[in-house]
Length: 192
Image 1 (tube, helix red, strand yellow):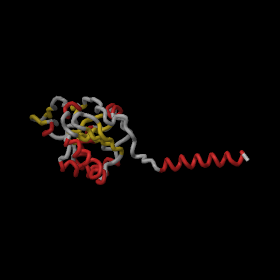
Image 2: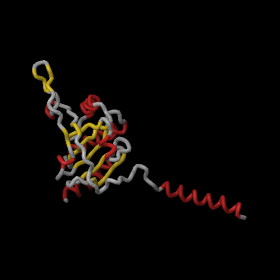
Image 3: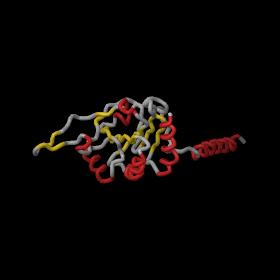
């Protein structure tokens, strides 16, 4: 009798675990950083035009200004989105028009983290597809991404005026995400 009940019991246990697993949302990867201070960094800005500090021609030789850097402290007192992207990322291309539209609303500052990318490729990509970022910084070795717990690109963080990470979105941002998640978060945090 036990030899018939044991396989039945194992089948029931496996069925329960399968049913529980089907109700999980694999794109919702929990972040241990939620409601904690955004990790510190000091990263070089991706210089895209002379207006934002890119090379300026004097005579025939371009003159490079000193490298400008950004830190989270520079953004204290402001609500900002931190979007991890790369020119080699196919999913980043699909979310990019949505970020361009979000940028037009001026709801929050959008900071780009150009992840494990070549600066020239990133500049060309932004020139072709538009630049939704108020500023984009470079993370060529991926250290900033590691500190933020980035699993892959794209990922987007919502950071409040005190510099706390309040929300993490894994995967490409959709129109529905902007309307149902990002704008409500931004509105709430701007009012605080």
